[in-house]
Image: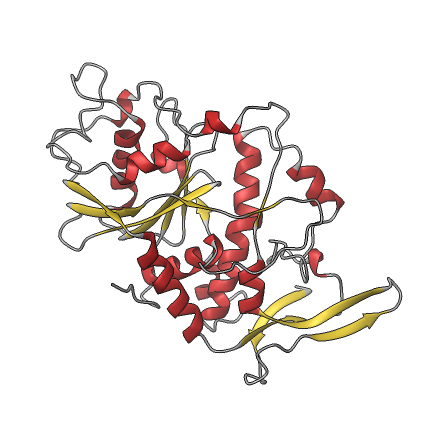
Length: 332
């Protein structure tokens, strides 16, 4: 690909940006750029819909239709308790992981404009910028299929490429291919479902619900679920006299996705991200962070500065994937 990631041989030059004057297009194109700087400035692209709605309507959706096909025999799903994890602990772990990584460069091997890359797609205002086709797409996000393309082609493709780099894997090798996310929603489709599920080789899962189906307060309720009564996540049949909330439906799905496969997972509505993991005791306990707001690129050419203190959502996502793969450790 025109833009690739590789180890720098100049690890002591932590601020080096090599540039090349591309005279035929009148643009100065960086030839090498520190990956840590790229990640610190990269933001999720903002998007627009033809159907407008106030932001406050996205805070809490509260109810979904009944999903009787989620019902299982009592005792099927083992989750008994959910703990809220302090986001500061995740920030600390992310910062430590990033600071411990060897110095790496994003290298533009062919001297072409970086937005032609199919792997590094999140703009950071310097080495990756959105062209007209990107902007046309991002200004017309009007369906779940559009959101799937946005998440897959921009956010997850970039994340997978950075994880490949940090894992020192050559492109196209089987191990690198296993780092690509696949939409596995067909495994977990139920009537009136609101989600997509993405898997990285069954080692790590992302549950995505578009923001018009799940708000910030719904994510907060998910993290604050607390004690789970026996069978509460199984008896989601409309005949059952139990609460049938967004939280319980999502925890039922998360159990179906993760139990017996992996511990770490993410739940997101794109605007907010919650990072979770199951314990090692039969998936009876889980922890989940309160939703962390993603910083969005406003698509108006505004120059983006580095986040002043906390890691970005993209940095946390890379770290959490590496925890799931055994390539990073949690702190606290």
